[in-house]
Image 1: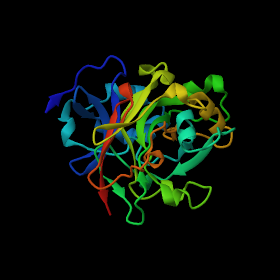
Image 2: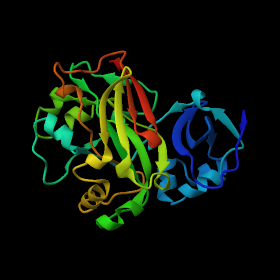
Image 3: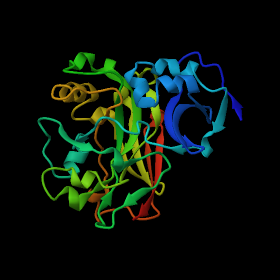
Length: 291
C-alpha cells in the first residue's frame, strides 16, 4: 500500500472507479489512487454529489492514508450518472468540410445516455446490427455549479474541469433521420475519462491539441481553437434553454479525420484500440469488442 502525500492545492486528477467490489472515487497522484475518506464519502457519495455540494476543492484534504496502484482499479466514467450529457455535432471546421456540411448557424446538439458510456480501459462494444462503427475524439467539459442563462463572459466560472470523450458513432443508424440519437446511444459505444482535470490547470482550453489514434495510427489531429462554437459560447447557448447542473457533461465536437470520411471508410472492429489524447487532460484508451 502507499501513504497519501500532503496535497497543498488541488492539482491532481479526480476519478470514479471500482475496487474490491465497490464503486467509489478519489484522486490519482503519481500513479497511485487514493480513495476519498469514509466520512467524506458519507457526505458526498460520488463525484457528482461532490460537485453538487461545491466541495471538490476539499477532496485532497480528505483522502485515505493508504492508496492502491492505479493498474489495480477499474475505471468508471468520471461522472458515472450525469443528469445529462449534451454533445455538439459538426463543431470543427475541418470536420464540417469532410462531411460536406455547411457551417451551422447554431450549435447542432444531441444527447447521450449514461448507459452508452464506459470508463477508461473498459471495452467498447461494436453493435451486431451495423458495420459502420466510427470513432470521434472529443473534449468533455464537466459543469461544476448550476448554470441558468449564463452570459458568455461568465461561462468559464461554471466549469469544474475537463475529461476526454470517445463519441462512438454508428453511422447508418445516425443517418436514419435528421436526429442523431439512435446512432449515438448504442450500449457501451462511447467512453468518458480517464479523470477530471480542473480548470485551474488549463487556463486556456482553446490552446489544447486533440488527437485520436487507432491501433497507434494517428487518425485525428485538431486544436480546440478550431471550434466553430467555442466553450463559452456552448455554455451560454445550452444554459439558455436548460439549466446545466453540477456533473453535467458538455461534449464539444470532433475534428476532421473520422472513419466515415476516409476512402475507403475506416470502421472500428473487434480488437481495435482507440486512444483519445488531449495532452494535459489525459489519454482515454479503450479496446473494441463485439456483442
